[in-house]
Length: 366
Image 1 (cartoon, one colour):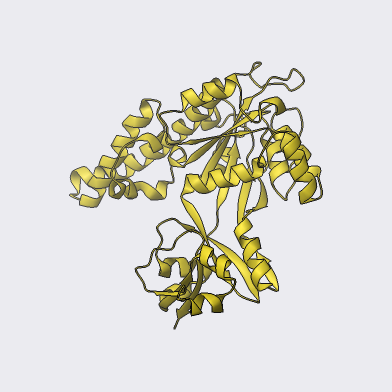
Image 2: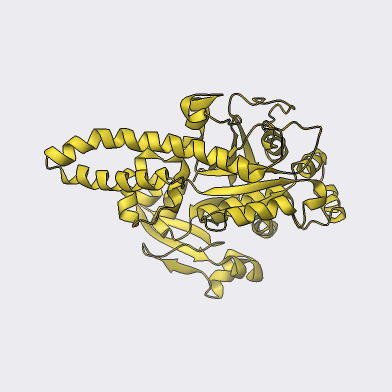
């Protein structure tokens, strides 16, 4: 399952610095707006100590972790929804992502120019929210114009249903609220799913702080926390400056010592990944063998055939059964054969809901 998160924010809030630090790609980073003009796509390997422990037991030829794609999208300015700045190009890039990582500047530094002249994360958030809402409003109004005639004169029940949903979203957006905060039954929301509304995407607010505030945050972070308390969103505190230093260290041991010296238990990269997984309700299962130990990302609540389909569509089409070992059992007993002898290898059918950490083999016939 592909996971792609878009890093967004006003110019000079630290998006590209963060992107450079957490991804395998390198974006230009400079002290002026629109430094990033084309979206840069980087790949983050998802750290999971469980996979390493499994590999220690089976000594596979290959170790394949799951990954997250991070898209660094050009800075937004007021009027983007009308085409100002990079306008529609920027907004189109957001539309293709699964989730939004909204970077807010929560640090003071006279050497780094803020596009609006002062540090105010709430103002910055509202600027981007407004531009995304205006673009969503345009999308909704275009759909309304297409279905309204069918609904009102043609007796088209499906068009009438879509129109009702669109009108509800329009009213919500006109109040200056994001689409994700509108309470509506899932089956109704599905009527306009293909519109891929920007403000309906799950969002993780990334508060970019100075190094001294990386552990506990600061007054700016508290302002953000208060501002988003009624949103279905997560907040993450990261110092892009610290992450940039960590990225320069070669070994895991050096990075660990550096984090300890900074009073941190994990890097911002790990916090960002875990935050993205929580935001999107994702979990991981493993396939374990001497040829390969591999991590697979699925949506929490997915049944065995759909989880198998993440590997290959044939696995889902011809699904027969799944052989499942809980991660804890595999580690405690040391091997698949030991788990089988101890009765810890279970045979599960089509209704089995995969759990985080399951070690699985799929039987199928196409």
